[in-house]
Length: 195
Image (cartoon, rainbow, N blue to C red; front, top):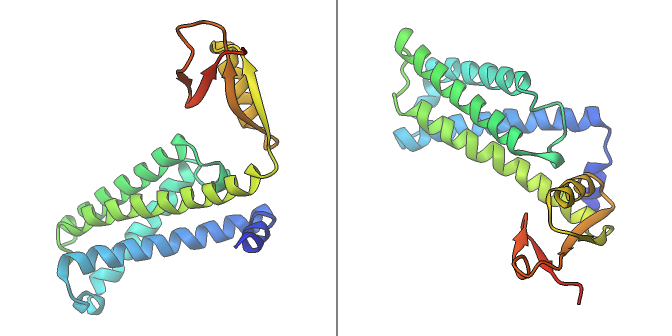
């Protein structure tokens, strides 16, 4: 597994971008297919032209929104809250447009399918990205040096955030002498005394 992970993260950015687009295409397809399957509990929908029209609508919409919101600018190993918001917005807009097209053009798509699709898309797209992020963190964790920061104040948080951007350091402890802070945490990192 580690050999594959190293190979993947050492690919050129353009190749990782293409892989990310392919994975998103597969996620959109899987979410749309599963939404129909969950709603209808049969594969009869695969013989309907409206299924494929709906798939084209959600694919184009989702890729457009994901791209517009900058989801493909940075690679997934750095997923942030902004990326989750972009995925949620893409899912929501795709859901709404599929619903609007279904109603306005009288497509043979059950009214619950867009909602099921949106939820599945959100869950699947964020899950894949967080999985890639955790694989990346696992690779870097072995090579990081543990660091303790003296002080538990806003400046210390700035230092911690700066060190998080560097793949060489892992902030594992805050050291502070204030009795009210001892035994608590700051951003999930314990605060202890130097003595």
